[in-house]
Image 1 (tube, one colour):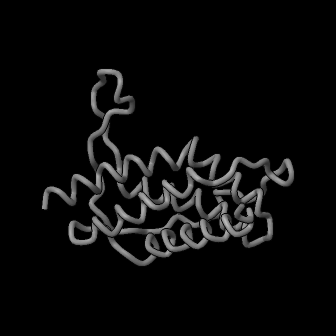
Image 2 (cartoon, one colour):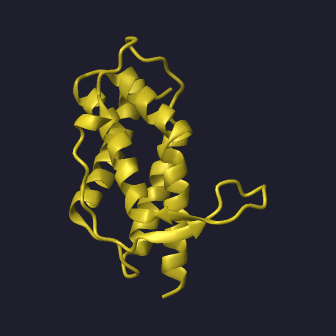
Length: 150
């Protein structure tokens, strides 16, 4: 059985790689495949994180304290929120998706770097289910479209 710290460390390295990419790279048709691979790996590995409870009741890694990164990319796209209901499409924003994923992952990275392994895993898993996971799926779809329209 893999040690929980080892699993968290591996995911943290991947999350840091994603955050570094957001801080340093742009998104374009030429590198859409690279972004797709990174996001799919992130999503897949986050799904495999163990179910844990936070070490303490107060998770103090406020997302408001995490700076909003600036990323250059093609920005808006059309989507429906629920693929099982006929709805009017709404405007999505790839830049917003990547920034929200970044902020949620940074929260877990801060917890991990502070030595709070269970808090970090809980932050990443909770965010996957409740926030950044949807942004990841939306970004993957938009990037796939960018890549295949080349």
